[in-house]
Image 1 (cartoon, rainbow, N blue to C red):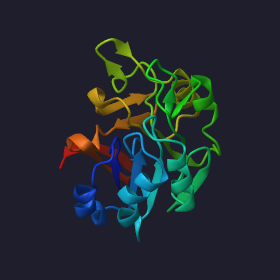
Image 2: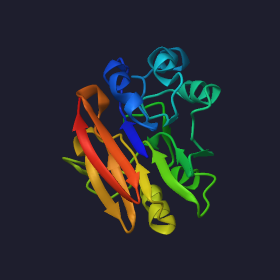
Image 3: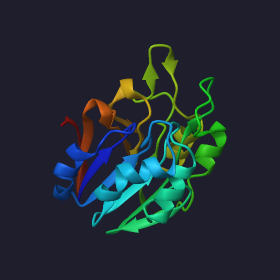
Amino acid sequence: MRILVISDIHGRCLERADNIADEYDMTLIAGDITHFGGYLEARDILSDFIRGRNVFAVYGNCDHNAVDHYLKEEGISVHNTLREFDGCNITGFSGAPKSHFNTPGEFDDESIGQGIMGWDEGTSIVLTHVPPYGTNLDLISSGHIGSLSVREFIEEHQPALHVCGHVHESRGIDRLGNTIIVNPGPYFQGYYADITIEGEIVCRIREF
């Protein structure tokens, strides 16, 4: 299975992703689809891209909750729910922990990890906007800004793959125990991740 991962679109056109998406079996979108937009903005960005494709998504802290209404309407949201595709169970949660920026998609940190619903032993992929705390994927100049509750969830359940975004400065690949964690970097700056699952998981960060 080949998976295309994009995050932090921030309202940009998806033409570059559209040009390569048909090479992949599935696309994961890790939030910040709009730049402080809602339902209509998310529809304008995603509607053409998702047609006829296997897409699963969460919304980010820079998306209003109405973005999730659109994702659910299209049947692509994994926020607080469980979905299945080709033998992979996918679950996740949106947004980021509360901060002094007071962005629209913020939650109490503990509710993010607790809200990753539908977990069972067959779950292969967890999709969140925020990275787990204390990794190479949540680091900015002032320190780590990831989610403690997401880290606890990953450490306890050890899914095969955890996909996140949010921290533009820390694109890359890391590991917590047996779980591979991928932050593809911001799409609006030209980054995406290419993941192949064929017995083992191979992840690469790429530029358009």
